[in-house]
Image (tube, rainbow over all chains, first blue to last red; front, side):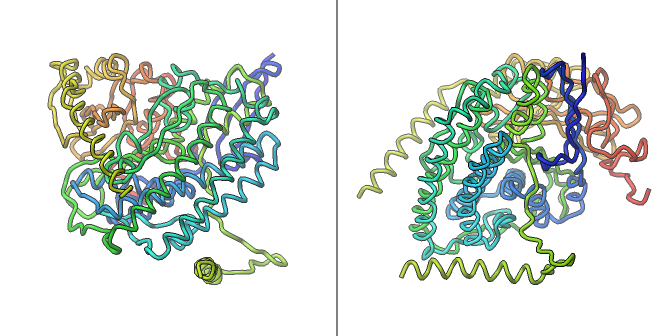
Length: 398
Length: 169
């Protein structure tokens, strides 16, 4: 007998507004229908009415977690369109912020994945170490998310050379934490039982569905935009590897992401080292005007390739701006990954592609039914905290 | 001292890569040869970006060649309203060669129709639905052409990505 289980669009566990319609026979999933569009904000249309520089901020708002990836791909597209080169220092800074974002995104996912299979200890631990990464982001850019670091032709903010040692020290504290997760996830029999052989996406299916990022790399497709197309970024100048696994199940996706975090730490430490030899302040090549033409920019977001296509007619605003987030192709692949599995495994399988959430709310304190802090007070609180982090490390250095 | 050595190794690596690059048959030549006389206009924007204009009658064949025969990855399609007519670009990525091949198809506004490629590439299912609702281009042969992003109560036949779209409607 066929039963339909609706999941979403507002589901208490998966916070994102998506609608999954599972068709089941007994315990087995036989078909999946996916509905999206509950959060459609028309960003491509909005972009057509904004100045090229403003669009950098607009695309940051597509996603709170990929808030560097979208601007990264966008500036790459405009730089491809106009043939702009980027100073070396800016290339390294781009990599540092991009990789910090990757670590925090993967830790977020790891925590959620643990939560989905009922392993809440992993969730708490992962998010604890994620705070370290967010503090690093805050020290560099002033913000935990939405860093506003990128601009066409370079980066917006410099990293001071006197801060490099602290940043490096703090980054190195992540290595034992990630190694702990590596041990916890790879050796834990419960995680193995819940994820091994579950939600398998074969290599052929992965090619058909054109999946990207860790989802593709867990299915044996060796692609990574950072390695394959390192233009206007420093990924070609540092030593690191791309972990690729063959199994295609949820476990492989967990392992790929954990190994990737270690590679990210490698990239960050090397980039921080190289910054020392470069002159402070040379972070931006001036861009006078954007000629007419078209450009394609890509970047490896934590979830896979972000694609931006920008067309200009010589004016101040994009004539057309097409954005493809990695989840757009990855989510569709659930259509085959979930089918044939148990209903109980559907949740972790659907979550295994790391569908994108918006989690930028910093704090909303409510007391007696009233909002305790308004926007201005929150801003002040956040600025005070940034200052505190900086001071704390300055004292620590002394 | 150590640092110097490190840099040197990197330079040597870089050179070998370049030599490899020279001796290899370039992917763009293979694409050009395979597509043959289907190409209306071959535009090389730079070393990494190629825009290939084809007729919409040849679209399915050309997509088959790029996706199945050459094994390129379908990244996405983007529909553009260029006032006189519509244009759809099908972006194919040759990942390891770091090149993008974009098939450009022009569609007239009186009869906005184009053959669907979702039979060849499953991943094109959603983007065709998206272009259909946002630009009003019909994909002939698509198995389930229904709304993807727009709300259910969005007025019928109003396409927000067209340039003549009026916000106040």
